[in-house]
Length: 79
Ligand SMILES: [Zn+2]
Image (cartoon, protein in one colour):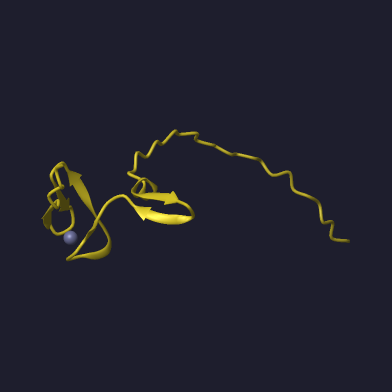
């Protein structure tokens, strides 16, 4: 009796669920912009939470969604 290493015909039961999951995540990449090989942050970071926590733009002020810190934009020099 010799052991035959036969290849088992594997039943390929592949239920490939092609679910189209569109995760609409707010990408971090939208917060950065690369200019001249330099990363430019488009949003200010929270002073309390530190760098990494971006603040949302609310027109005349920025708010942090993490701690609720609100920082008013510096008054623009109106000519
Ligand atoms: Zn914060």
